[in-house]
Length: 498
Image (cartoon, rainbow, N blue to C red; front, side):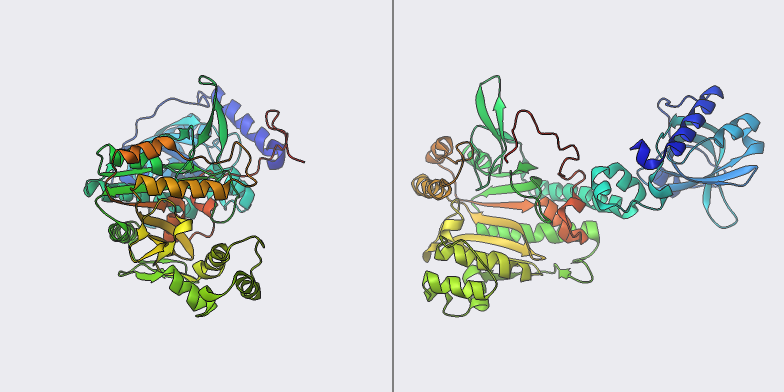
């Protein structure tokens, strides 16, 4: 890292650090009492008011016997003014040894410059932390995409727009919690390390629990534990936390991602639709200040009511009125003519779902509830009473991405056993032993004690943030996204596959 930046810059900073120490300014100070954050000082600004502030030095304009500089903290930027006649020769000369990126504490009085800039005139200052490496590109912004993700702290310092995205993320998560708590939902925590993964079909991360000498899995979904709580009498619950799926990286997928799941006893799919539409429109209005989100090139209108359409109708619109009457070979030929190429072993249902996921879903820009999906795709949902081949679910698609699935939850233990056994049988071929799913007998035992009818839903928080902020990639809304390590030395415990 030092070589990349240039040794001369690093050596100069070290020389300044030594000189400051000799003048009585040690490089790494102690706690500093602030009058408030910089945004609070600005909002309560009064001429000649005495204040103390702290932050990172980000600009420095030396005018000989005076210096104008900028401080930044996590809330704002504020101009400071150092004058030789006010500080004294020694303190002023020491101040000139500061480098951009250093953290300083300052005490003084507030005034307004001739240009109308609110400013703090320094009477005393102290060095709080010395930056031994310079800020990227002399504060003009960090441009290298890979470096932005690997050194997110520099990205946050140099790109104000990035910090704003994460401020919006923080606000969004807070508002989701507030919205649910105000409606008497209780936030709970369920295991993130499980003896058996369940609640979704995905490849889990595998680990070993030494104390119990047993294989364990990072959870792929909290669903089966949350439903156990419904059995136990918690009738309105949610969990907002991490899931882990040992699968690919893409613009919309990260192996560690944030999911919110919510369950309400005595509700159903329609109850979940009302809940998610109200929640997302509330969050957008509070956090973004508008229901028109996305980007100028791909605008999204969150105004209610949201469209509802069946899976079957969407497929027929795209592939023609005869689609579901076609034989498998004819389906495959028509899919290939549309530009899709799949596994020859795929069933008619799998070919159809490929059409939906690759050709249809991405076209759904404004919020759309896609309902009545094929039963084999959703083994944890109730079948529709008028057609047992489909289940009473929705997939909420916004901006061409699935944001939230919601179900009328299956609570019949006998039907649930049958559906899980079918799912395991379909997933078994080609799966390694440690990846193979099993029927969760403990979950089925819980259902046999009686789970009330319920509505359930999951919201992909990262994708929701992408939608609200108009971010193009999931890495742009995760503070520390997963990246390929720069050190490619093989892990001695996990031999690399040739």
